[in-house]
Image (cartoon, rainbow, N blue to C red; front, side):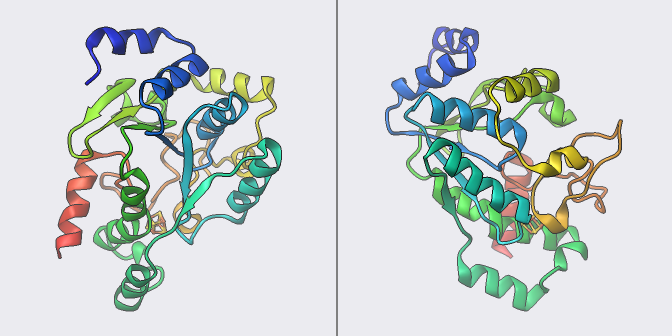
Length: 242
Ligand code: SF4
């Protein structure tokens, strides 16, 4: 386990130094999950340009925007490196679609959570298997329920550390980095899409709206997909047990 002193030291390092430091502490056991949004593109740039010992992966739910697939191509061409892609289990998707319907996530919260569980959470569980550190591109500004999130936390349920090195970054700091390093990003961001997920569940937002307002906008309840929320993980486990 990391000591409080080690955690504090990690928090005081620059972004590249912090990731390099944790990669050296847990060789071969550090992974980064990218959903290919702007925050994640900053981290991909840091990891690939500095050749850090961190495995980068993404989850192809099968419902992503074409712009997201094109961005994957651009990343590979730019950095001459590959992002590992995890897919849902075919049998899970077939069962879900045949029993609930291809776009049934619009019909009920349960259906939406089940779709996210099949297409996102289960592949994530496979991708994280064996890892000791999970790096994310979460920023506190993105959502009210991320305000209290620490930079590094132990996840008892997953038995790993979750490292959020951008947690205190502002939007302006992120954009400065992107411009300064000419980081490739999805053209959807320039059309009002702030948080980009699956195509049928993401819309552009209006100025002044919460950054997460464009995700599952038809729902009024807790809006997370289950990747980062302990509450949502519990709900997803309940759905899985049904
Ligand atoms: Fe399914 Fe929408 Fe969740 Fe994607 S975001 S996994 S399409 S419910």
